[in-house]
Length: 238
Image (tube, rainbow, N blue to C red; front, top):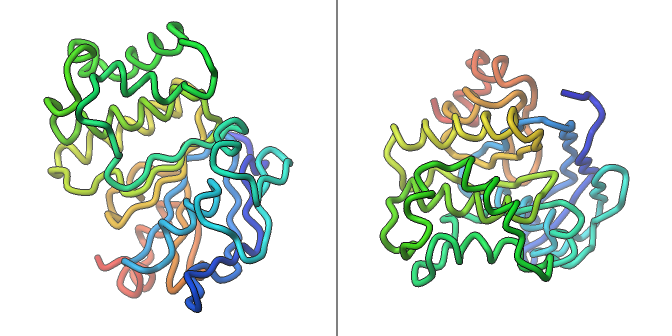
């Protein structure tokens, strides 16, 4: 893993009306990094991801991807630059089949890409036998796999995941977290994982950032944050 930031966030500030949701947030994510962004509800985690992908406007600050300024790109352009965002809850379309959901992720390429589809299905064996079935027939864990797979259809350089463990059983959550490490190792993907399940996220990531009231309150190697009683008790609730 390179120490050079692939995704660089500098003094990023964003507001919800009069409320400052992000307050001068600076985060470096190295290429092939697997980073956790942690914090309580309202800490600014989801706003961070939405601001990175152009779904929420930045008030000030700068975001660069591989040295290119992407701070104020609209969401559809952020995808073409290499950012893919899996929102909280995944957002699969239950009326469509697994394969149709996956193809949606590659629509901006303007043509069907069977090679990418085959590669994505290879990463998620449980989806292969369900590819022609409606997404409504999938379990919660399988739907989360489908949401991640759909994002990978765009061949991103950076995958942004918002609370992928939400509503999942602990065993399924562990499978999803393990999958993220496998994805990084197999594809070279860079992953930013937003989570309230701090212990689980720190167990699979390289580095963690703790947000509190829109600011970075702590950061460091994931193992260090796990062993730091003060940080865990003050911000992470375990």
